[in-house]
Length: 142
Image 1 (cartoon, rainbow, N blue to C red):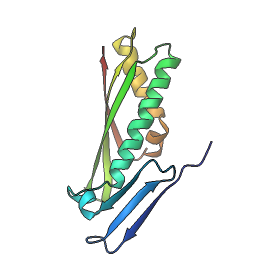
Image 2 (spheres, rainbow, N blue to C red):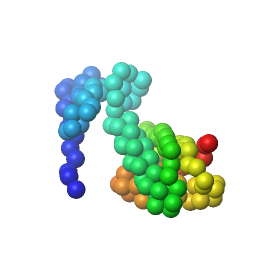
Image 3 (cartoon, helix red, strand yellow):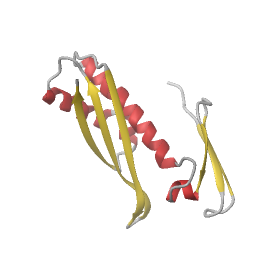
């Protein structure tokens, strides 16, 4: 398996500085700042990128689990809500909420939920984030 890369540059102090993060593939490059991370400023932030990675990984893992169980999904859409803020140990990601909906012909609700839970546990990004509470809300749509 290939090793994936990303890089970041930060210039200045925390409050007034600015930075840029980019993926090694060149698919994304974006600015970030104190305001984009701790307030509502323009740009991205590490937590948003973790959310995108988690949503993408979960969607793929869920799709694969469904297919392995004999159900071909038409579509899996996932949103990750990354909760970031002050904790007793300092700033941290305290919880990630995965909201997913999928169209899967021929599957029953119990099997759908079982496969969703397996994907949450076995997705490589979930494993990397094992110290964070991960909450899943999976909805079967037609």
